[in-house]
Length: 134
View 1 (tube, rainbow, N blue to C red):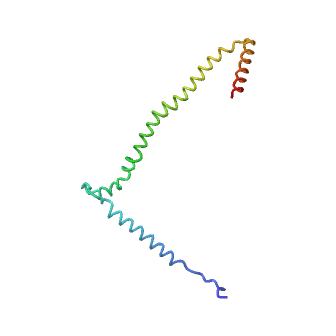
View 2 (cartoon, rainbow, N blue to C red):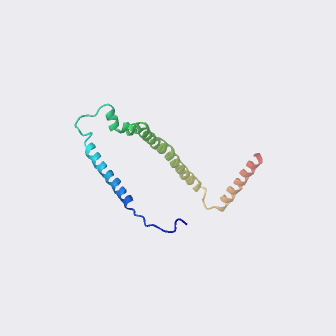
View 3 (cartoon, rainbow, N blue to C red):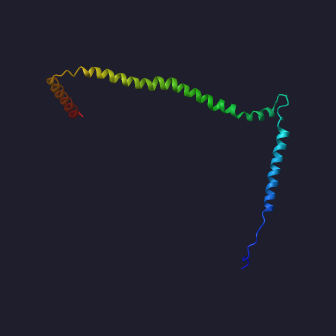
């Protein structure tokens, strides 16, 4: 078997290469920072394509104009017209109709058993007529 004897390997070369590459990265970061730190801060107004690049291709302004503002207007319309006039009006109307109907039906409950029997007989007649013709 060729692998009977284990040899102790030194990792000094790998550690040295890692240290060298890390050192070079740090040196390049510091060099780029010193070279480009005040690149756009020279006091001159940027114009043309440099201004487009400085403002990130105007993507934020375009997104705001095409997406955000129309959606804000649409949501304001839905809140003011659909929500307040439509949905709230429907819910409040149902509540008012139930309150009004309850006030009218309350008058039928007078405590007289004869009236309750009479109302029950009228109800049976109405159900019989409905089932007869339908």
